[in-house]
Length: 392
Image (tube, rainbow, N blue to C red; front, side):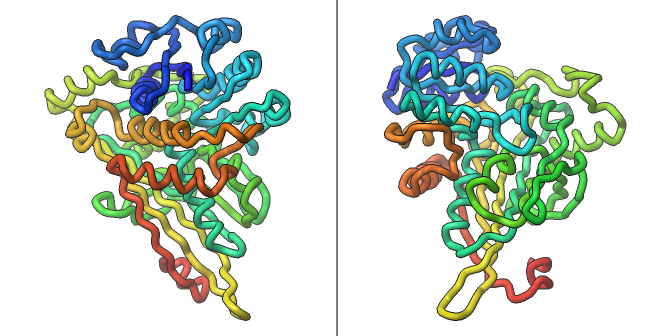
């Protein structure tokens, strides 16, 4: 395919390179050309054009001739980029939702009828979390006759005394000042920021970590496609511990705006390499766990099952061994998104989150991500009563 990637930052630049390796014709658009060149590297043959994601006409001009537009810029621009895709009559992909119009439903879903009329597909929330996490929830749901509870637990950390933006600083800030969305007793609710502290056991080498409620996009699509009773997402790790501390100190608010000292620009590969040489940045980790509780009927009996999937992504050290200088979050997001595009079902029309894709496509993406040094382990436990559930 001919693919235009809007946004050539840490994630977009790596995604563009992965798509080029798949054999696609790729070019990028970004409002900061010098920064984009730093991320793509001097040896890259990928063309970059000057374009502002706020400018619909500019996106249309820059993307003309493509078959697919990928929004790898901030999710606040999703609707503008989707309109550009409709004008060009091309397919669309993005990495996350912004949830401005409705805090409980992905804004991209409102474009479903228009994409159906154009006979084009918009595939939304195709990163690691959301994205891969959605696929894992759907996989577990298909093993059950009914789903009761879904819990997603994420871990982000960097071995550095100074704040390090593992992905978009604007995205991190937006997440930090937003109230988390939860689904309880079949109803959407707004939770309190950094609330419901819980000690959670991540797979080794992470181990135990405190996690708290976070504003994640999975809650804005999964309950619409998978009947369930409750769902929440929590995040832990020193990156989120730092945000929680600033919130308690009154340093995080929409009125204050983004403070660059606390939310620095995402590091270019060259800058990451420099910090590693100086010993300022030693390592960084990213992990995700999906827990799905539900009922499986066997003959005349019902069993309550807990299906757990652990995902351990390559650490900063392991990514360096591959010859790359990027953060684990950007690495994970770009590689998963590249697989969504590799197995892109062009015969579908409309707007779909990952969990709404055909089973063959979902299985191919999960199988493909294992080939990129991502460890995925599934485990199923039989639950006999609520006490055992809590104990697990």
